[in-house]
Each structure stands twice: as C-alpha cells, then as structure tokens.
Image 1: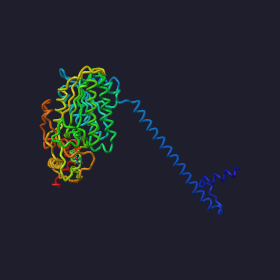
Image 2: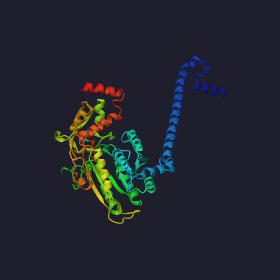
Image 3: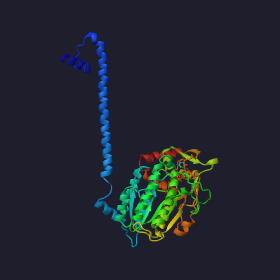
Image 4: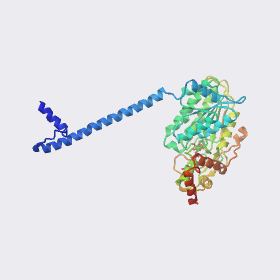
Length: 445
Ligand SMILES: O=C(O)[C@H]1O[C@H](OP(=O)(O)OP(=O)(O)OC[C@H]2O[C@@H](n3ccc(=O)[nH]c3=O)[C@H](O)[C@@H]2O)[C@H](O)[C@@H](O)[C@H]1O
C-alpha cells in the first residue's frame, strides 16, 4: 500500500528533488507521466486563475450594485441646504427655475444667464457619457463659480424629482435634459426613448403633482419638420414625417406635453431649436468635430445631398437661443392646476428658435478654415440614410411677435467666438501643442 502511494506520488510529482532515480526501462513511461503531470498542473493553475477572476468580477459587481442602491448621490441636510441656496432668487419677483440638463450646452448657458439677472437656478444633470463627461464637469465648475448648484441625477428618478419639488416651490422648469444627436439614434435607439420619452413623462408627472405646479419650457427640435419641403418651416406646418428616431421622440414630446397641459393644467412652451452652436458646445456636432479634426490634421467627412446638392442648416448662435429661452420663461403664464388637479385651461405654445438664414455645410467648413487658418482635408460623400434631412430653415415670425425674439449673430461671427473659445479651452497657443499648431498652420498655408 505504502509502495503504491509512493509510486503514485512519483507519478504526480516526478521532478521532486531526491526522487530522480529512474530505471531505464521506465524512462519512456516516465516521460509520458511527466508530460501528463505538467499538463494537469497547468490545468489546476488555470482553474485556480479562472476561479480567482470570477470571484473578483462578482465582488466588483457587488460593489457596483451596492453603491447604486446604498450610496445615493443626493440627500442629506447639507445637500438640501445647497439645493435651497441655489434656487433662491436674488431679485424682487425673481424666478426659481429648475434647469434639467444644466451641465449640457444650452442648459449651462441658460442657467448662467438666469443667475446673472438674479433668478434662483438649480441644475440637474446625469452627466452621461454620450460625449466627453469632462466637458460637462467643466461646465459644472463654471456654473458653481456663478453660484449654481447642479444635482447629479436623472430625470427618470421620480423620487429625486419629487424631493426637489418638495424642497423648492419652483416657479419654472426649463427642461433641456435629452438624448441629442440625429444620427446616433441608429446606434442607440433606446437611449432616445429613455431620456426623451420616459424621462419627459417622469418629469411631467412630478410637475403635475407639485404644489405649486411650475410652468414648463422645454427643448423640442427643428428635426420635427422632418421631410417637410415647404420653406421656411412654420409652427403651423404639419410635422408628421420625422426622418429620425430622435425627431420622432421630440415630436412625441410635443404630443405628450399637450396631454399634460390638457389634463392637468400645466403651462407648456416647446422650443424648436435649429442647430445650435457656440462656445462650450457639443463635441458630437459637425462644427465642433470639424474643428477638432482640422486642427489635428485629420480628414472631415462632408455629406452631400442627392444630385450633388449641398446640405444646409439654419445654424443658430447660442446667445440668441438663450435670449429666446429667457423670453419664453418671462412670458410663460402660470400653470393652473395644483396637486394633480386642473383648475382651468393653461397656456400651450410652440415656437421656432432659428436664425432664419440657412448656410450650406461647405460654407460652414470654409468659415472654420478661415478662422483656424488651416485648410481642411475633405471627404465628400453622399448623405447616408441615417436620419439626416437635406436642409432646415426657420420662420421665426411667431417668436419675434410673441417673445420679441430677434437673432443677431450670423454664422461668421458666431464661429469666430466658438473658435476663440475652442483654442483657449483646449490649450492651443499656451503650450508646446500651440507651438506645434503654429508650425502646422505655417506648413498648411
Ligand atoms: O436642429 C436640431 O434639431 C438638431 O440640430 C443638430 O443636428 P444637425 O442639424 O444634424 O447638426 P450637426 O450634427 O451639427 O450636423 C450639421 C450638418 O452637418 C452635416 N454633417 C454632420 C456630420 C458630419 O460628419 N458631416 C456632415 O456633413 C449634417 O449632415 C448636417 O447637415 C443637433 O445635433 C441635434 O441634436 C438637433 O438639436
């Protein structure tokens, strides 16, 4: 028995020191066992490593899950004090505005404008990673320097919304949180349903139940005009031919807000923004990504319509959009309901906020080349069937009449401001990158 065990031990651990007295006759056999034993040792190690990795991963997922459920990023006395302080107006009869999407492009500009004139502003943003969240964090820092606190949370979080509307009697909600981008809807359709439909309904539910009910101004989009060919686009035109899921969710938003206006007496103003651009803009948009690529010497893709027709957009500068947003808040009537009950008919409005002078995409590129002093490497291709429309053009008579909206910045002047911001934000001209850029510019001209 003892011998059998020793033989077995020899077979399993053939290279153990002091046990290498091998008989010639068994040499081949031993070779085979050595090979088998080293394979099985490797197999045992592999099993061990797999088990280790699996337990690490399940630990990580436990940590993630528990942090989701047990460490809410909001709540507590200190947090409530910050919320109240940010939302308190600093001028007589000032508004108290909840701005959703406050760390976004339009949201950050509107929040600062309201704050500067003495309104109370509380921001809400989920800081998602649709584009570089560090830009959103930088906007948050900018907002903080103006005294605007941004709560980190999602418009789908009904508990958070109820809490905010309970702590602060908001006079207005400026709802700008959304999944933006026309072409990204092909890649991630559910994110549009999540933010632009489910998130909107969750917000409206919270507002309808609040006492007082705030008046709501929210971002619709020029994209609702879809395949409309009648120019310029007027609010009274039919909008039942969306070309993208993004457009369809914005159109759905217009219908959904109408329902809440009708049933609960919520005051609603929908703003159809036309391709908004400017400093602190969105990196996913053409003017921004073109600038990045041109400066890095990378090619840009310029889409062209059928029959080689250039695409055109009614590009609208951010400062003009901000004026339109603020004027909408100023002219919004109070909601008529309270605590979920309608007490009378409430205001329902929709406005185009455009520039009313469309510019082609190649002209946009030419302006950027001039401001950057770098020639773009252009790939011109036919517009893929991904939700884009050939042109947009806003009729802004209604907004002019009722809001006093009067855009004053053309694309040339607006892009100049954008480029100035871009170069400064990304550190061009300050560091070696700036020197390289200078050398690069000289080489390109
Ligand atoms: O008004 C809106 O409601 C929307 O405006 C904006 O959409 P768009 O007008 O499509 O802006 P943007 O992407 O800058 O493309 C501009 C032009 O460049 C062309 N384009 C684009 C990318 C590219 O690589 N090449 C190109 O030629 C492209 O074909 C187009 O002709 C917002 O993103 C959207 O969230 C929504 O707010």
